[in-house]
Length: 194
Image (cartoon, rainbow, N blue to C red):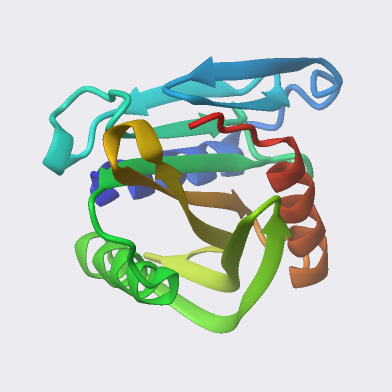
């Protein structure tokens, strides 16, 4: 994933929020994202950005990519959802993969993560999802984030699809318990028929 782009989107959104307070009442409608073998509902005012990842090219594909859904301004309802997916042959340790992901994110984008809670685990069907909740700071901007990871077999390709899903919010009015519940609710609605 282009970590600078990911954090750049977050940075732009957080800066915008300090200057613009709008769209307070436009969060009631829902839409459903469908593409690249997965789907999830999101509030219809979110902006959607899709991009490739270095291993699979500049454009997203069935084999790998990144999706960011972000509200246009930051208030008590601000949310950013990040979904990264990639296809791999091996069956990795999800804890090791998350360590690598977070280390790459931190070193390429000046993010400092603190107060990590986890790993916590939830079951989604036959898959175990590991997730971590932590505070983040990038150049003085504070946020709270939950990152989860799981692996699904892609039997027709004799491969695996790895998902890394994150939800980012400002720390205002959000606590680890609220983010935990938000993540569990999101995972319940996330569909992947691989």
